[in-house]
Structure formats: C-alpha cells, structure tokens
Image (cartoon, rainbow, N blue to C red; front, side, top):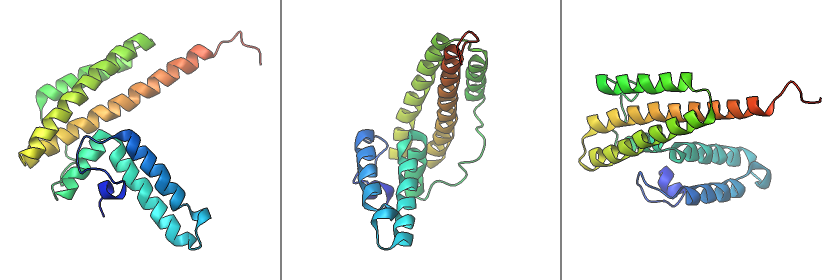
Length: 171
C-alpha cells in the first residue's frame, strides 16, 4: 500500500494537507499502541503511519516519494550542478544570515515561497513528461528551499524569543 493509499489521497504532488492531517490523526488513534491488544503490531503500524505522514507532509519529500513510486528516486543526494541556481541560492542564504528583523525574514520567506512554487510547477511538467533526470534535479532544488524555509522559521522564532526577553523583566 502506498502512502497515498494509506491516507486515502490521490497519487499527486498537489494534495489537501488538511485531509492528510485529519486522516493521519484518525489512523494514529486507530492504531495507537495503548488501544491495541497486540502492542508490538500497533507500534509498527503507528511507526509506518508516522513515516508516511512525514513523507507526504512537505512538497519536497512528496515529490521524492512520487519518484520512488516510479523507481526514479536514485541519486537524489547528489549535489546540484546548476551554476545560476547555486548563485541565487547563495544570495538567499546570505540574506538570511544578514536578516535582523521580522520584516526582512517575511520578505525573504515570500521570495523563497515563489521559488518553491516555480519548482513545483517545473516538477509537475518533468514528472508528467517522464523527464526523470530533470525531475530529480528539481527535487534537489525543492529540498534546498524547504531547508531554507525551515531556517527562516527558526530565525523568526529566535527573533520573537529575543523580543520577548528583556533584562528589565522581573523573574
């Protein structure tokens, strides 16, 4: 059974994330080890459900999983050989390192989301045309931008934590 079948979703890059989460929670409740007579079996099933949810919850891992279903997911850990992309990626990383306020991070987040949206469109075309080399390359790029997005979220959290902390606060 594929991850998509497990969550009763279409085998596609575009899925309803709310449905994914709702089905995940239902399955977790159904296979929770505390509610089963066979705790070992329930623990294994619960772990499978968690892995499937993790694979489908982000667009980069979902794209990689779609490639795996077509047995085209080899060499996804290779580096990106697109000089223009790498130059843009370096500039975005530098912007993140230099960001000092939430407005800068919000602007950068918007730019990264535009990159992700463009790569999603590119992946769909590559996947439909069975251009596996390009699809794998696009997944590598999606992975990069997903990591950047996660780092932006961490930086936002850090800035918010720093703003909430003041030496004048009473302990």
